[in-house]
Length: 249
Image (cartoon, rainbow, N blue to C red; front, side):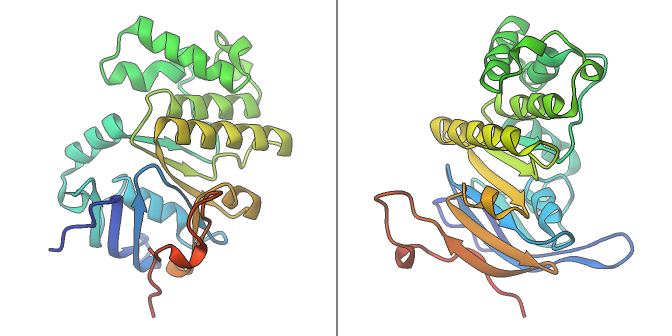
């Protein structure tokens, strides 16, 4: 078993995954994600984007292939170990808002912090700061049913960012937002990630969303078909970047 490169915080090799009905979701996908990088995984519906994020994050066990996080093999972990990894090191944003209905907005945002052992006072302070950044501070004491869908999704984004995870997995995180709300939320997400050194793996079918990433990997029918390097301003040229996604044939 070959260890991943030192500069990759996430590394996957020859990932294969099938749905319960036997249809293939991933067919030999390999890629690496550098520390503090924002990687967009693009492709049409059914291309395997969500499945790839679920495998990389340990939400589902890998059937074939390898997944490494900071040189630790995720693919050999048991379910409880993967659950602790997700709680302590990872963040996740779903396409549609999913909040605890009995908790208000700041309590939902603070929940991951308190699960990690942060005091209620410190967790509340961090939660309120992130809700303000996402222009939902006035709804901090409202419960989910008192918020419109766009507001609930911003609470979900704040909840994912508040613990400053090592890796944030965002599965179409602004799909439920209007265009103006989407642009603001994405700017907040990417700016926060870069300022806090958070690695982001972002699944999207939207070219404008993918353009905010440092690099884009394209999937089609569960196979990696293209890697596009987007160097930072003043950084290396595209030809100097390294490909991190292999074409499976």
